[in-house]
Length: 303
Image: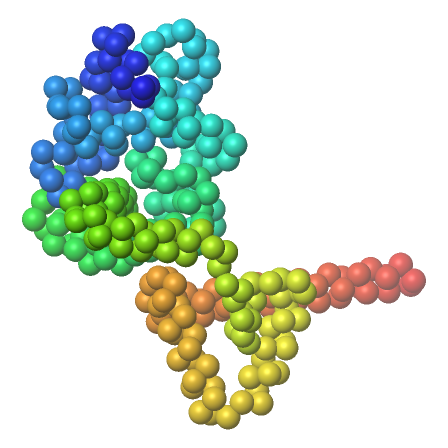
């Protein structure tokens, strides 16, 4: 029996349990493509999507976790099974979801409405999913803002909403595919189970070892500067044709990983390199000034 059913036996309505998050829900889903899902509805049916969203949010709410710890006998503070699992995962993760994303991570990484575990949020696949959402829905923001006018949310909130909607859509498709074999003939069911088993084995099998290339520095077993110098020396020996092939491979790998527009990323890297170069020049200038001052003091003391 699920924790939700236990609450039902105690006559604790979903509305009473999640009413405190009404304003947070309305703000988070003001841009939901489905108008019926934009506003908290205390009388909504128990299979309404808003209750799943609120359960996800409460599982990522540190305040709700401490409220239950302070008063475990309060029936309204008790978690559902899903919320309890999320609290435990966030506790192990030291509640990083309450802080800003780490440097280089997607802005929506710690979206409390997105039903991903801390490990999934911070994984390559999780970051690639968020980049996919930004790439897919980012271009539509201007049209949404123009249509909505003064009621439009900002772009980052819009993308957070669309990330939740996209994840829900993917989950619904996966569930539909799982239920489909039940409506097939016995032979088709057996074939479907075999294919599902093969897919599960593929997902659970360890990823093949990635062959390191000149541009792969993921190992970090040696100083990065040393690896960069070696890479530059190696690439200096290549012909123009080989250099062009290497560049095209890098672009393809960038796109396959869902990291966004390669040209935009290149511009960011160039900007970063310019900043680092300026910092290095400033540090070198300060060292020269300090050395000159020290030499001047030594001459003054010797005189």
